[in-house]
Length: 593
Image (cartoon, rainbow, N blue to C red; front, side, top):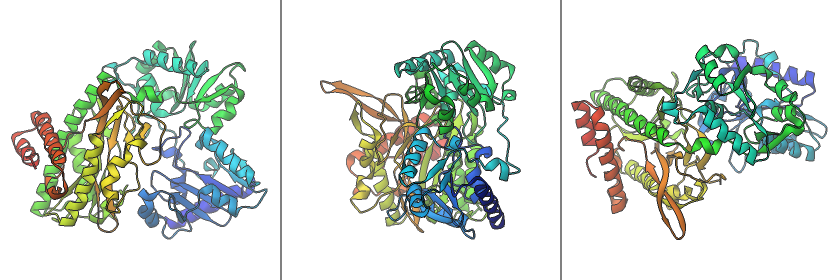
């Protein structure tokens, strides 16, 4: 593999030289600005060998560097070992940004190349401004992948299917009308959508184009007099074609999208989201573009009553599957039967796939035993696949896609008698989880204003974690969706009723253990006073926390009561789905602290 990486970098540098490009930036995304991407767009992974879902590769005539964040430091170090690629630990004070590195390394008059389809309008504009100040040129039409990646996978060909209104809760015609109304409010006559989750939601369509994300590789142009879906045409069967026709949506080849935009009348005003639409799209639209906010994101984030009931159902069947899987884990470890991290993931899939409406995982399961739990986005491989033993902590972060909703849950369990240090760390994390989960906050509150609630008990002891505390979750869509999030840096999207968000503080001690406790929570109205409306969270996830890991000596009575109340609800909601043995196991796991 290391020899292949060297050969690929050599081919890239040959293309750079032929095109007059002195440095190239290759991000981990696609023309839809996606986090999870189809194999066709895995250019950075192919060039570097690094498989993490975040990070950018920078290549110059004599250097190759990869920027990624703290979730992937350990993974990147291992996967880049033996190559010339240097790891740049993004987010650390001593690590320069990509643009800072390039402006301090390149000379005036030199050129930075990018594929303009892989950077948003906002990113491209900011990049050009920074490079201009340093006397550097930006070439946003440098697309070497097709030439040097000779066996590049084709675009996905999985068929498109309709997400029935009995699950979606609203027709595509209604959604299109609401989205167009929002575009009009922002001063546009039409809009162009690149984000795959937004297209799938708007048209009530799904596919299997991206691993664990039931989206359709496509672009969507919406206009009052007729709309167009740009997609691999052979993916559209007769039923879906009729569905789209009823919505006044025509179908055109995926590759024709930019040409379509270039041919629009000069007086057309097309709304595009500056953060989720590529610079290549802006090149095609020119003065016809109205750069604004997504007309879909907020509408999609606030789940309707049908979706909410579907999510509740998903949590019940998911919780029942988890009971069966964790019973097997516990039994096998106690009996000394061999069980590995990959085996844990297989057990979860085995039992989830037996549930009604199961479609796929919602992301690759993270099963980290002992020190592996401290690697935030650890992914077991045959080389790292640890065998579980009757001691230490196991962190399991997993989820599923059901027709009725998307799940995402993390539990940390003790595989033997936990140590005092393990119990102390776990309880600090849970205190933050409870503080956030029980928060009451006024209308207009953003996630960044709540984040410290989850971190306060760690901070008091000089501890912290570097990832966000919460991300938005879709409905039978992406497990990571916005616009809301709960994190240290402010994201300008307030938490509104119907939004589904994760609550997942953690603590990671390198080489020792990792702890994360995650439930999904729904923003719901609490009450209204003369000071306005107030909201709180309804916990949606249903599965017990490990009772043996709680240190009651550092918990308040309210915290203990919350755990007991949550466990009582888990027992009541899940028991109807369980057999007698499973129900007895759950009863023991949910006894009052």
